[in-house]
Length: 377
Image 1 (cartoon, one colour):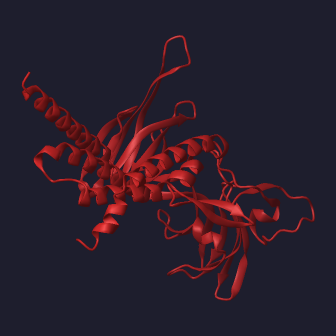
Image 2: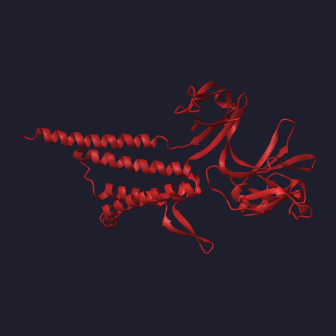
Image 3: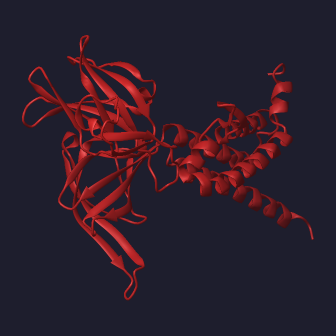
């Protein structure tokens, strides 16, 4: 311990604590202002959910400042070092110890939430069921094939694999894919006669594709597109354009089976199903101001032999199997309900942290009050 003490004392420096607090305030300021220009999602990812803030310099992403994760990690190390060298583990200091430990729990929980947490959305129409949710922005290329009349076998390729382009092997399938070109955001329109296209099959022969600047605002989404060549061994079956904006899948036949290519929002499947039975959208009388959104769903989980109704409304989510379903939006003349699905393994840590901080401050306050009251007048 003695040989590490000089290093621990430097890490426990109050100056380092003040620097972390000041830098986090700067990050909050610039991150909040950036939301106006690039949207909430992109600003959070750039300033808070990152280890470094990058800037484009001469076409290269160069780290220029530490991000929220780095500053938070340094502050946590600072608190742990202070625990080791600055605090006296005596009963009279219990309040200070609890308050600082509560801050450590808060930072640790936030780090787990940012690295392990997942958010997605699940739209369901009245009378329909769903066992999957969709990402807000991330895409995937889905290749589905008919196994029989009721079952499709689906292989998904995440967008990050498409960015690398080139050959992609598909396990246990008689074909493989060659991503000839990946486009992060494309403008797709009707092609003029004689327009050259990389596509040799499908709707790509009839449309033109132009690269556009990626979008990041909250109400926009990139039209991810790719030119995909399907090969059986060394024989090319053709090249198809798959695009999120096209909606309809592109199909090809191989070995007596029909396969479909489709660009879609990345999905996350669950072993249970939600069925939307009712949706209510109440407004204040004489106005268009929303008063209440509520959805009555049927939760069915065959693995756990569970089937029950649940009412989801504002500030009353459904928590099940480590996921939380919030009432988020609606559409299609109140026949569609949209749930925000959150998986956060650290969701309890803010409550635990606040309890520890309040308890520690309370012990500290009443301890001093008791000492003051015992002083002779």
